[in-house]
Image 1: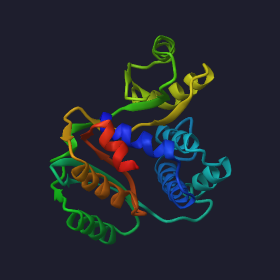
Image 2 (image 1 turned 135 degrees about the vertical axis):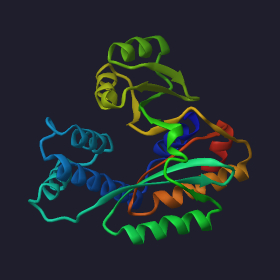
Image 3 (image 1 turned 180 degrees about the vertical axis):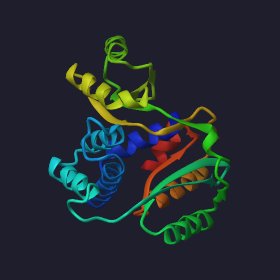
Image 4 (image 1 turned 45 degrees about the vertical axis):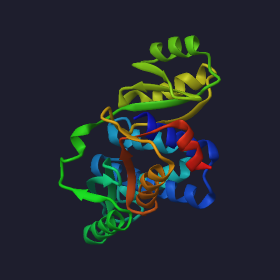
Length: 249
């Protein structure tokens, strides 16, 4: 969990290019649209939509864009019909991967996912072969300059389960339903929140010790993330901080 979380934090600190930011917003809008179509456009009565909207706001997506996505989902603004699919497999070195997609063409997306696995030295797995290693958690990453004792007290009062040193930042974990409320509570208390999300995480970590092996793992993850239909990519790699920094550089 710490490796994947750390990599996400490094990318967040470096900042996203406009193209990458636009791609993220497009994926978030699709999540909102599907959530609204499945459970209605009222965030108070649709917890899946509420989480999708909170995630979009955490990424600084505008309220207008969020509203348009909700309207498309409820049939007020057109929009496609998307299907949620989860693919499972392994990156080079036996690192587990979960790939969540929303697609309007199952055959096209399935072929794309299989092609990425093949070209990047990974392998697809049967449903359930990888997913059992993961569970969804709320993770809020706070700038490492925060005082540990103050952060711990504030976080626990706001519903956190744990605060851990993640090497230059603090990783605050909680139930997934509490992640974005926890983010708001920490920001209100004056802490600098770097990110907040509800990823699938694993305690069954696979060590990746060399820069070359790390590049292979991160390369296949980024190839999946670049696919327009892929919403999230989760992994269980554990890469040392210095190796991650070297790869990021």
